[in-house]
Image (tube, rainbow, N blue to C red):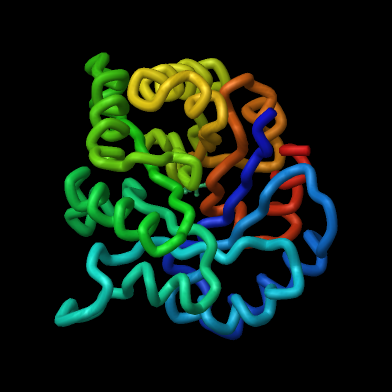
Length: 250
Ligand code: PGA
């Protein structure tokens, strides 16, 4: 039985003060104790340290939105995985489509980041997803398989890894993949992973869905056999909306 995981990706939103306010509201609701799913929040780099201190008492998992593939050095504007681990990050999101689309994160770069983050003891949420054009030209399967295979190249152990399937056409558009469309891709990702790492490792892997998840559609998505939670953008910026999604995972 896989424990579901719901992570709020705040993207480039919220000042430090606003981040602390939102984190406080979520931490009060998540609290501490036994939970039916894992819950994470991913503020900007700037707010990570303070938010981390604030939510330390709770079960919320501090998550970063990106990292660099080297430990340190002359990489202006970047933050390393070891720095994230040092401020208490448990997870890092890598290969988000916005990184791939706007910041040149190729699968080869994402792969270097995945390896570095795992080496530094972080858990990784590896994002994959096809564009609308790719879906319409019938290449969704090969695009996703390629991103999974390239993203995991040289990764020996996937026990600290989560994959997030996020169709690019569904991110921030209000257009969600139907539960059947998402389930089809999730099942194929699990089959790809089974081919690479064996059935047991594939059965243990959590695969989140992301792309316009809301309180109103989360339960149907999370009820699918291969959907193990969600990576939430817009709806994670409001504590009540986010918690409605967390509840749907239980
Ligand atoms: P969205 O974003 O929920 O706003 O569509 C999801 C994501 O990019 O992780």
